[in-house]
Length: 161
Image 1: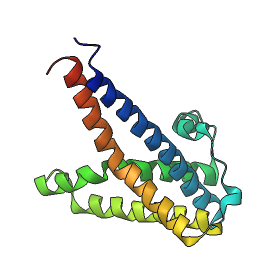
Image 2: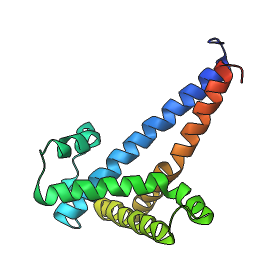
Image 3: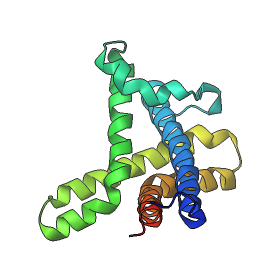
Image 4: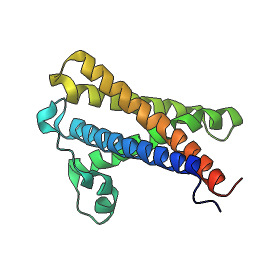
């Protein structure tokens, strides 16, 4: 094991950087989708971003949420799962593992999230809306693959694989 491999540490730092961006984008998309389901098309004034957003599934299982907020939490987490598996679903459909309906469902949920992000950012200029909507889509649908690639390269660098 080579712990002084600078190239491997570079891959670790890159993976951590993209993981941080992925977590921030995931928290933002969870918050905006919940805001859309609870308050409709509201602007930035209703957006309260917090790190406890990432612990909502635990709170939902403990029974801390009910009613409209619980439905919003469940749908927003389903949406995040659709983002994270969006790249794999195409391969699953081609190989016969999944039905084409899953791919249609994933894309419908992603469009719903883009609408939620666009609606929450309605108080800013259109180009900021477009930039953030595309950035969140890119982060959530592609950064997981980038992170796993860098983790694999880091492990290979540390263990001389």
